[in-house]
Amino acid sequence: MKAVFVMRREYTEAIRRKAFIITTFVVPIVMASFLVLPVLFATMEPQNVVRVAVVDQTGNIAPQFVAALTDTLKNGKRSFTPTIVPTTAASYDETRAGQIEAVKRGDTDIVLAIPQGIMTGEKASYITREQRNYNVLQRFEKALNDVVLKQRLAAEGLDYERVKDLTAGVTVEMNQITAAGSVEKKSFMAEYGVVFVFVMLLYTSIQSWGVTIAKSIVEEKGSRIIEVLLSTVTPRDLIIGKLVGVGMAGFTQLGIWTLLGLVLTGGGLPVLLASKLGALNVPPVTFLYFVMFFVLGFMLFAALFMVIGAVSSTEQDAQQMQVLVTLPMLVPLMSLMMFMQNPNSAMAIGMSLFPPFTPLLMMARIILLTPPMWQILLGIGLMLVTILIAVTFAARVFRVGILMHGKRPSLRELVHWYRMAG
Image 1 (cartoon, rainbow, N blue to C red):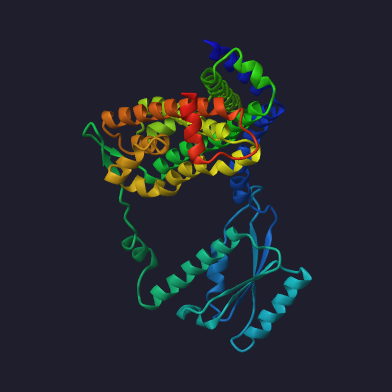
Image 2 (cartoon, rainbow, N blue to C red):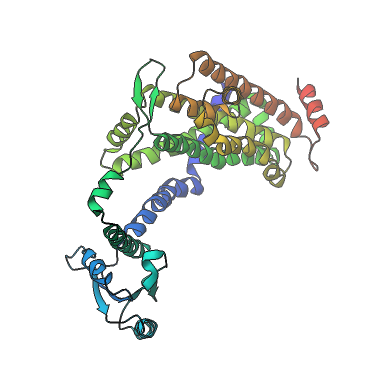
């Protein structure tokens, strides 16, 4: 029960830190900005009318191209004011150069030069100084392609609309046979998105709070407070109290972020998530697995970070050794796409039962195609055993390590410390 007092102390100290308060309220704003601003900027259209000079060496493409530019701005005005610049086959280069000078003077915004060989594959030119909007270029390219295609088909005596109907593509819809034997519609990219969100949420949480745990243990080893603490609690209670206390602080932060999401969406976040998961045919029990594997994964990697803190004499040592914990988290990230293509392969099953990979890969398998219950229970059991081993090892090494300073212990010394503490 003495671990409860350590847990309260760690939890209280963690939530009172300025870093906790700042990250709790700043990180959601930053994350929302990363998600919203790129989409907003990508969809923003220029609200000014773009002046376009069309120089057509063929003499018969420009009218149809201009007629196709019927785009309008939000205020109802035409997006483009195209002008067909008269030219001949002989004066095309001179006319084109003259319009380029007009762009330099600011008299026009874009010059679209259509050469004589456009019908046989020669490239048209989009010339501008400031109007580099990719959407505008894409719009011009599509309109020009349609006009050229119509004329090519007309030259062969074919109707454009008829050919368009005959060459319309087909869509292959992805379906999957579930564990219950029913056939349900599946979206590979949508499922990948769900798995990726879970993986990144767990990864970022571990990276931020795992480092905090390792740093806390190193600080305890180098302070006088530890002598007072160990006179009232055992190293095992201290380690467990730190693990649970800091873990609760991390979950508190996630809870606040969830609450902020509910407030900002007017309470519509659960409805939105339910509709999205329903569209993906993700059963409600998956959310329970999500919470379970998130908690177990957090505790597992937090326990591994505690081992790093217990065997390190300084914060620099702990930072250098953190790669031993972060690497097992990167492997599932790098192999995620491969396992999503065949979630029941022997490699996928084996790696999902390896405790450091279990939280990420087992959750991915559950979302894609729920594995047999014995595999899920075995993965959970192996994770719990690993957490127990990590906590026990950290407590024993910590007990002896507080008396050892000045150098990083070797592997043989760590084994010796473990046996001494036994």
